[in-house]
Amino acid sequence: MTAFAFDTHEFVKKLKGVGFSEEQAEILTDLQKATVQNTLEQARHDYDLDNLTTKRDLKELELKLEARIKDVELKIAETKAELIRWVIAVGLLQTVLISALLLKLSGMH
Image (cartoon, rainbow, N blue to C red):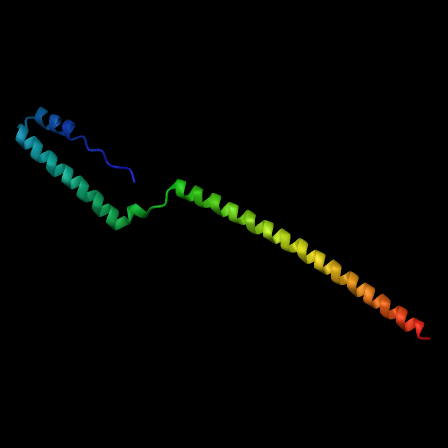
């Protein structure tokens, strides 16, 4: 969260410029500074400003998700290739077994 900059010196100068005494200007400046601080604290509390998501947070999350999606896609591709190998192997095994059975049965006659 960006800090709020309150230029107390400039504030005192302006107050003194319109006729406030040094003491009045400093007291009013202190009160103004406390009011601003209290308002910011209340806003933080009311709107949970310390837990807002920034564009940078979202970009980091997006990059992490993209990396995880690529990992999952790679694992899916590997699993698909493995499954294809098993299907081909089982198909070949079935072909060999059926051929062997046919040869065995045809040799019995």
